[in-house]
Amino acid sequence: MFLHMLARLGSMGQKPKERPLRADARDNRRRILAAAGEVFVEQGPGAPLEEISKRAGTGIATLYRRFPDREALTRAVALDALERTTDEVKRARDEEPTAFAALVRYMHRVLDIRIGAVFPVLLEEIPFEDEEIAAVRADGVTVMQDLVAKAQSDGDLRPDVTHGDVGMMLVRLSRPLPGPLPREMGEELAHRHLDLLIDGLRTAAARPGELGGPALTFGDLDSMGDRQPR
Amino acid sequence: MFLHMLARLGSMGQKPKERPLRADARDNRRRILAAAGEVFVEQGPGAPLEEISKRAGTGIATLYRRFPDREALTRAVALDALERTTDEVKRARDEEPTAFAALVRYMHRVLDIRIGAVFPVLLEEIPFEDEEIAAVRADGVTVMQDLVAKAQSDGDLRPDVTHGDVGMMLVRLSRPLPGPLPREMGEELAHRHLDLLIDGLRTAAARPGELGGPALTFGDLDSMGDRQPR
DNA sequence: CACTGACTGGAGGATTTTTTTCCACTTAGA
DNA sequence: TCTAAGTGGAAAAAAATCCTCCAGTCAGTG
Image (cartoon, rainbow over all chains, first blue to last red; front, side):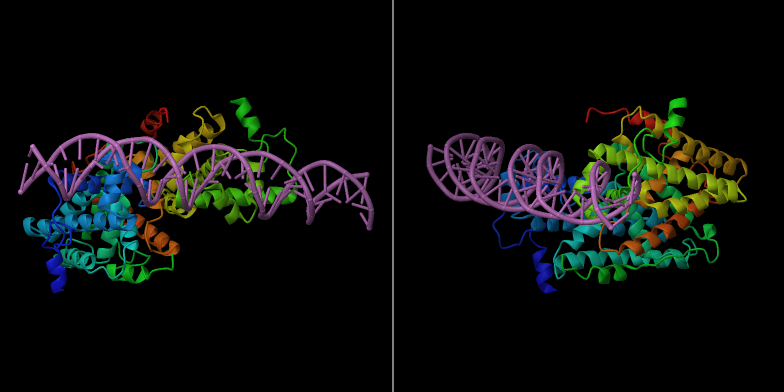
């Protein structure tokens, strides 16, 4: 735990002992990370690395130098995304007047970040015991869990949904639609549909005894991940 | 138009002039079609053909013999899916007491059929002028459009949603979730989330002036498809 | 029930895609 | 001004996928 905190002192995902990157190199690293996020969302986390380096505007060698293999890159993308979403959920909690309003804002922000789309797979491909990842993730999950509970006890959020529902719906809505829709329009549509869903999440919308299906929590998801041999 | 009707006399997607397949061959064809549907949903319509033949329990040669190239297979899958969903929407319209109830039933059925997940892409890869496809599709779309209009004038369905919304949400919900969730559980979850969404679609759930984003129709989608060079 | 042409599987060569290394050249920054 | 850090891209190596071919099997007719 102490080790984990130390690790985060270095600038973002770098072990602190390593000599810092030259300014231009650091810049390239960031661009690669951003490009990787986009490409993973669009093509899945198995997308060709060259596509990523191309989109980042660097050579393929630069990518390999910074991230020795796909897993290193995947991990960095996941960590970055986790930090950003955790950040958003906290900000929403602190700045919105009600828990429900915070949830609404957070959900829309996650759609903007897009990376939620491939979260489950990214995490699947990272060593189970990665402490740094696990810590940031647990942090964010806890906040969201609290918001859901609070919104429910406020009487705004229907009691039969779980934070797992919220998370999974976000994954669904973040994924780009297949087909001819231009990217931007697809994203506006996602927000539109999120609004519809949110109206279905309000207490007033609930019909008694209606929801079937598994009421999942993130804990359930983790135990599911139990590392199939591959 | 007359030609098109003729074409449909033959047993399902076969041009009528061709000599009928031997019983075992016809069986294989059907299995390949079913397997292709599944694989397309799970891996996208560019999935390796060998995966399909394997899942169908036939050799790769059999697939190639029956469908000379990927496009022929894609077309057959799309046509089959289109016919099945069109069938479902009509059955729902005829058997349910209200338009809204029909929509609800139809939406759940589409999730079961799963193929909706890749519909837009399948259609994208088929020659624009394919009359048979276009006819079945238009047929189904019309029925759904009528249901939406009826449900709205009945006062059950909120007036600010379009049939395009319904279609696109179905695409979203049909797509398998990435990650470790077992397939079956993912599907139950989709139905659960569809229920939530449906509660958001009721007139009572609407908040005035709420929905942003593009209110798409299927007509819009078609014009979007205007065949980018590839 | 024997015969035959329709049908089959899968090996394997051709082709395409993706990974990964290497090195001559450039440049940030002391 | 000097140099170690950083770079791009060519190309060899590996992997994935396509697609054909043919020796052998079997459905269905006469």
